[in-house]
Amino acid sequence: STPHTSPKDPLIGSLHAPHFFGNQTINLYPSKITSPTMSEPTTTTDQEEQKEVEEPIIKKRKIEDASNGFNAATDINNASDLTENTIPLLPRDCKTLLLDIEGCTTAISFVHDVLFPFARNNVTKYLEGLAEESDKTTIADALVEDVKKLGEDHPSRKELAEKKVEDMSSVEEKIVSHVHALMNHDVKATGLKGLQGKIWKAGYASGELKGHIYDDFKPLLEWCKAHDVKVCIYSSGSIGAQKLLFGHSDAGDLCDYFTSHYDTTSGGKKESKSYETIAKDIGLDVKEICFVSDAEEELVAAR
Image 1 (cartoon, rainbow, N blue to C red):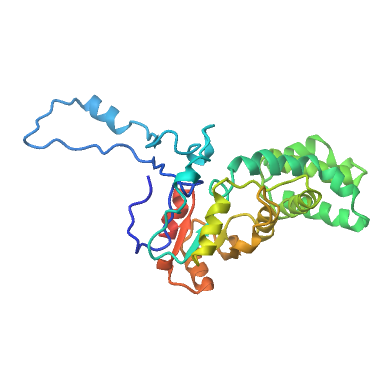
Image 2: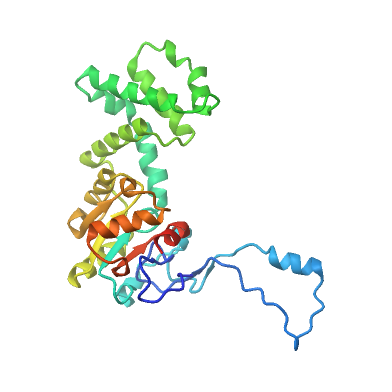
């Protein structure tokens, strides 16, 4: 469920992501295990107590059909909510919304099922469009540096060794092999992320990519604009990638709705100091900012 908070609590968002308008709540915590009182004797065995304590946490939806589930996990459509609930649920003193992207404004599956495969499948096409051979060499060198920073026994290193990438004469072939080896093992590295960003930029520009947003997100932005509530973005994805997604979204160019963008150059999202840094940059007291995320650890850090 949403964190226990009063309107005065600083930088606390709702775990009710990605939908801002619906009434759905999600219980992320187990039922309270109460101790017996003197007036309520019990004969519970040690085994029964152990079983009760170890009962797994269950996510419960209070209203089953209010939205398409936590992180859009099910196929229920919540579009009809917008006709009944047109006012976002915001703390009383909120002057600025600070929003996460994945699982909040945008489906997590968009990144993993659309963006990553697009980058992987369009490496060769992107390289063919580069006029200068030196640009390809720069990309290859950056990817080689990414691999050097990995441990000797890292599976990406082993995969490249098996492919005998050192014997490849084509720089394009070397780049493709490095990209696949790094992405196959979910490596987050500077050279790889830089190349992915360039491929996505080309995809957005050509119209092959459209940034996914939830149906209730643009109405939220319009409401905030009409009521003088500023909206900022804080995501682990680069500021450039954020602007590409919202600038080429399913609902058109949304960039003008945002006051500012933040990424991990402001600090990690699980570090409390990051939110103090952002609040200082925005120029508000932390109590006037509402951070919204689907990740509990990030909400704890913001608090």
